[in-house]
Amino acid sequence: MLSREVKELRFAFLQKVYEHTAHLPRALTYLREIGTALGCSYKLLEMLAESLRTDGLLEFKGPGGAVRISKQGIVEVERLLSAQPKPTDRLAVPADAQGEGATAPV
Image (tube, rainbow, N blue to C red; front, top):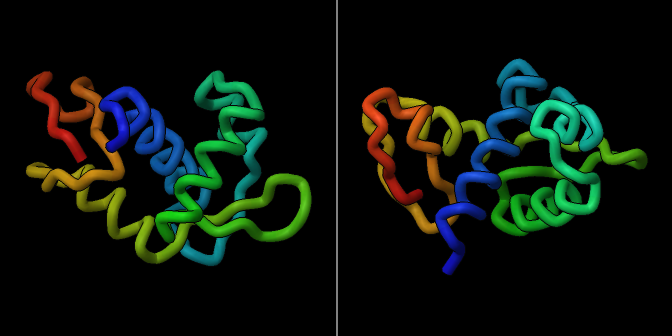
């Protein structure tokens, strides 16, 4: 089972991909762009991207760290950003993203 911290980081990563690709499943972004936005090392980004790819939420597309969010990834992010996110075992919405400061394991 993933720790809350890892789930939150996975969500932050996937949310940035979602934002960078304008919510479009065919649009690409690059790991370095996401890393700059999150302040993460490239090695950590590679590990996060691989785990999200394994879960079917992210796709690798071409050389140079090109990635895109999958349709399933879009559904997950939009569900978690909704007013009442339902928990899963893969992602967690940070407390400050939920409005009231409450946390919900995802």
